[in-house]
Length: 64
Image (cartoon, rainbow, N blue to C red; front, side, top):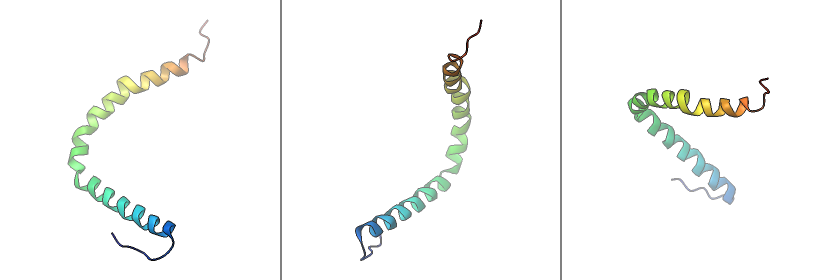
């Protein structure tokens, strides 16, 4: 990490920028892993998370 001799907020901005770049590099390096996990995440969203959110929305309607 590079140190900058300015105000403390400037040092913090440099640290956030550098950590974000490293995070993106790690995501790109593990691209195939995310591809293998994607079907499971899509099924989880389709059959678990979406129905729970939709049922919460249905409670605000009157179905008489």
